[in-house]
Image 1: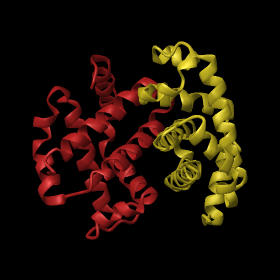
Image 2 (image 1 turned 30 degrees about the horizontal axis):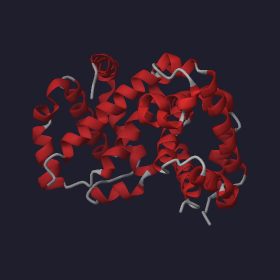
Image 3 (image 1 turned 30 degrees about the vertical axis):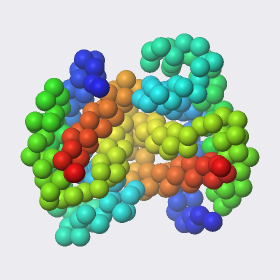
Image 4 (image 1 turned 120 degrees about the horizontal axis):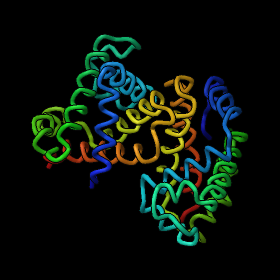
Length: 147
Length: 141
């Protein structure tokens, strides 16, 4: 089980309370598809992904980004039980979606940059530490049921 | 592969950062040491406390080298040749750490540029730091 200090929990919950999940989720997914274009391989049914402008404006990208970050909120609510929280999603990503777990790490790093750009100085080094730890734990939990 | 647009964006970012090299370099290092404690193993001889002169001076050195690389995007291998030798034969920093420092530099830019760290700028800069990392690791073996 992952150990979280009281300070880490506070830094995570405190920031999460101010996050616009729809906006940040859409932005994080869009940036993933723009910065690491090979990730578009999972989204051939999403329509026009031909340019950064197309990706950012794509309604399916926005909707899916919101869905992904909403799910991330479950981790924030269940910091002491992230493994169990993502057990079914882990199986899904392996068996049905066939997503290489490296992509979870890429998206995690992108989310950090999105948070940094939105919260600026409030995204302190201590805050970054707690959030990088969280995205790492989530990525690990999502990869855990792979076989 | 850096496109012409990428190069323009990278140079613009470096222009904007030119008065803040020490500040950005210092902050990137501090974030790296805090977020990825294993990176401290390369600096047993440093005072790693917040505000340390050694971190400040080293941060400035690293940021200056990156700014210089940004002025030589068509010739990174040559521009970084000395640093490449240094990292391969003397420092021998494991290349995974270049990605960690890259993440921290990008966080610093995102913090300071906010919305101006657009997805296009983000992509260009990520590619740039990745290219620098490749050159630094070029002579490792």
